[in-house]
Image 1 (cartoon, rainbow, N blue to C red):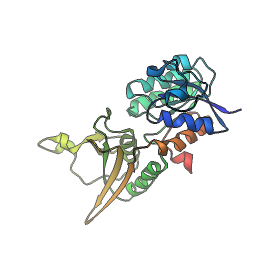
Image 2: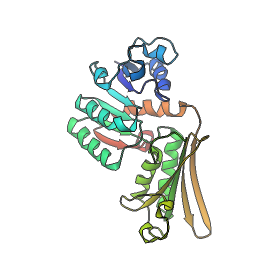
Image 3: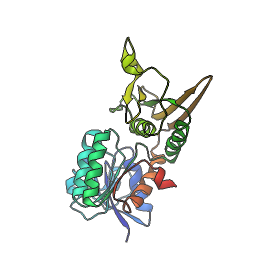
Length: 268
């Protein structure tokens, strides 16, 4: 029996790329889809494709009335946590592609997933090359003490830092060596120019650039005496890189209980 998926944010940038991919996969099926602005329309027609035989729901609660296995969320930062908790309470596994959640949010989601006996996979970026950025940066952080992150996105991106940048900072913070840069709270002048501090358990400075012409980019900068290493990922204008990783996560999440952050353990 195909794995039954619900896509929230079905007419968004990634959602409209996911729907045809799900329809083409023999082991997957689109059980329901959510897009408030196109509610009542056929999901395929709403994205300019062939009919899919699934009527778009206005809310996730409506979509959850249809039997399904996994909810994939590509909506907005202010609703993704509520969606995730509702899906877990309804007995679904969840794949989170929406950024903007804090470490405290993820702790609450992890507890809810374990209580429900369901899995959640969350990644700031589901592309394989972005996963490699994180993998290589974690290796470097074990050897080079000083590291900072710059994330770049379009002028209209509402959350800072990006999910990719925040997730990378939290992962690096857990493994990095003590840095040599003067602590931010010991600086004078405008401390905000040093970026935001992600400090669990070792501080990482993150800087967000929001300008036209950027889609999504993230770089980890490592510094040592007389040398520097930059590891960077740049995304193009298409959502194609995120589709394969998202569907891999949907296939794997049903085997898990609790929260999995990042894609590394899924691609090993």
